[in-house]
Figure 1 (cartoon, rainbow, N blue to C red):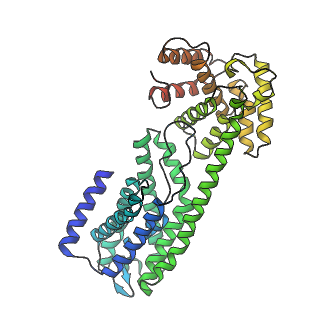
Figure 2 (cartoon, rainbow, N blue to C red; figure 1 turned 90 degrees about the vertical axis):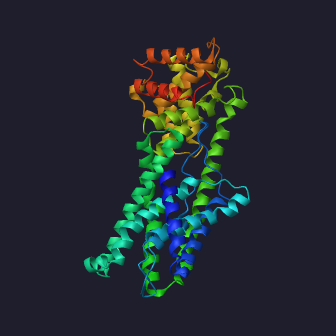
Figure 3 (tube, one colour; figure 1 turned 120 degrees about the vertical axis):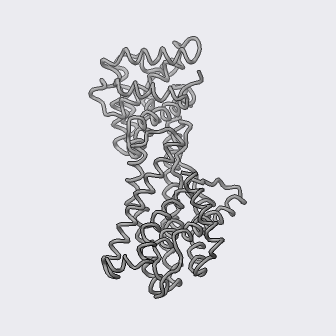
Amino acid sequence: MYGAAGALAVAALVWTEWHGVRQAEAALAFGALIAVGEAIRCVEAPPALPDGGGGVPDPRGEPAPLAAAGALGYALLGRLGGEPAAHGVLQVVTVVVAASLAGLVAPLGLGCPVDPGHTARRVLTAAFAAVCFQPLHRTGRLADWLGHGPSMVGYLLALLALTALCDAVLAAALARARTGWPYGPLLRDELRSLPGVGAAVCATAAVMALTVAVAGLWPVPVLAVPLLLIQYSYRRYAGIRATYRQTIASLARSTEIAGYTPTGHAREVAGLSRAVGRELGLSEPRLTVLEYAALMHDIGQLSLVDPVPAGATEPLPAAEQRKIALLGGAVVRQTGVPAEVALVVERQADPYREQPLAARIVRAVNAYTELVSGPAAEGAAGAAALRALERLRLATARDFDPAVVEALATVLSRGVYGRPR
């Protein structure tokens, strides 16, 4: 992806340098929109949502609706104030590249992290939209086929929907290359997010291109205001969600502070459970429920008079495990988290065929972490991990889902979530 975007950017810059910039006022207006949107995305961005302790951050990051709408609006600009637009596909790429890089200057100067993946995706998606629109419009074929009425608007919306689909494919591929997570769930999460911010970006880009075609450049800053509000709302939501998760994590640490479980146990189970859930293809909302349940899976131990040695509940009798799970579910229901989280907590001691998938994952991961870190663990960490997986496999007749155990083995084999070997 980086290679394709880089080659396209070099070709566009060389072409623009040779032929010059056409209708510089439009290029400057849309370029400023892209640069401002990119700078806003990077500067003072909210803290990244934690991944549950698995060691791999969420690769999607914060969206840049203003920059994306500006790039697509310029790619679909066929007329400027009633006159034909003179720019072409390569000038669109040049403006997008130059403006995106200009928008990164301020964040880099302030020491803020920047993500070149967003820029590469924006270049490729803007080029795709421009290739599908500019040649047909400049030759007059698009007007001959569709005219300038509702059919043209329909074409623009369909093209933007296809462009958003292409961007989702690229985003999922980039996340897959960075993390090694399965491509299918990543693509599904990207597609699920399109009706939100993606729809607003596409609608604004279409309105921007159609309005500028008639009224000129003055409506551009006005049309940018809704996207700025979307950006602000996203940051508020991300901040609230991060605070919410930190509150749950703090509540989960109560068992560690009270001495019922080892320090870091809940975080380790949450990170590894999330990785196994992603390996099994769970969507992002279900992964969030799984993570919260994994963080609070031991909270029922606070009801015990005497702590379980090393906090290991797996060796306890089934009735005792069930009692702790039910008490934990009752506590979780009082915290205000979704009811699905409490259900997972209170069902984690059931036979796996009666459990929801999230409860199967939490139970298997909890048993694994207890086996590799408890008093029974002997020898090198790698040998302890192999013995723990073998014990889980031997108990798949009743206690552990074979598919979950194999997904756990796959995650551990990557060396990202497992212990040093």
